[in-house]
Image 1 (tube, rainbow, N blue to C red):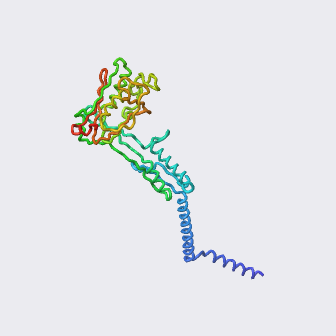
Image 2 (cartoon, rainbow, N blue to C red):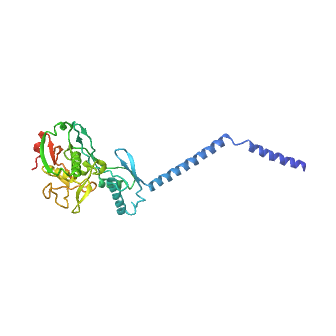
Image 3 (cartoon, rainbow, N blue to C red):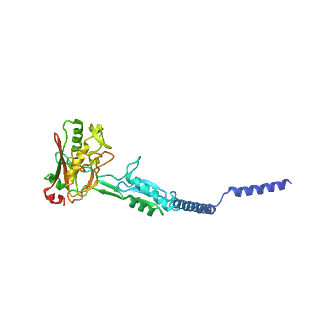
Length: 330
């Protein structure tokens, strides 16, 4: 019995010794190869899953071409591109409108041109160009990219003022149009407002193809900018308001530039007749509201100059002698 027990013990130890010897190098290598294949298959499966996920989450990135920055990212599928194209299109149109014109929270990309001007020494004071975001073109680009996703460059069109630097020394050579209005020199507040607004339009350069905006050029008429309380016409009533009298400057300018081959973009009449210009020859303005705008459709630039006197305001339109004939209204 003891002998049998010793044999069993010997066999058990022998088996244990074989187990303790470990695996051969070939076996280890085979196991590593199998593990490598399993890992590769797992990674491939994950890659396919990620690719499929990306296809399900197609995105369109809207890029600012001037900075190459992503300014908006949209997910067409989440917005209903595949299920309701008309509604999706309307959403994209609204997005393009906000990007171009802004809303209560953001400023749009569209910017009116701020015209260049000359200082008293003839040096150029730079303004800023006209910037237009073409809404329909942006909508078309986004719709085209919505199926597969991708980057969409915003169609921004930038227009600089239309004049040549070499013309600057000669733009004041010749008066091609002029108009004068008169005021009561005893009305100090009103006269100060006329003086400030006249100074704001003085020596403004209007290039060929440029758009002039009175509100953009003159800016806010408030106490911070020196404007004073004075009578102004609102809803057929004469009331006191900061900046009253500025409309005499805009109306004087209108009557001067009306003698040129230009196109009026915006002009409004007062609700009552004014005494400083004939009936129907006025151009009322209010900052943030009514504006006086025109487009220089001639082929040449001209210079606006204002002369503020004791009881009068004169607006002159000047240009280089070589351009005089081109600025005559036909």
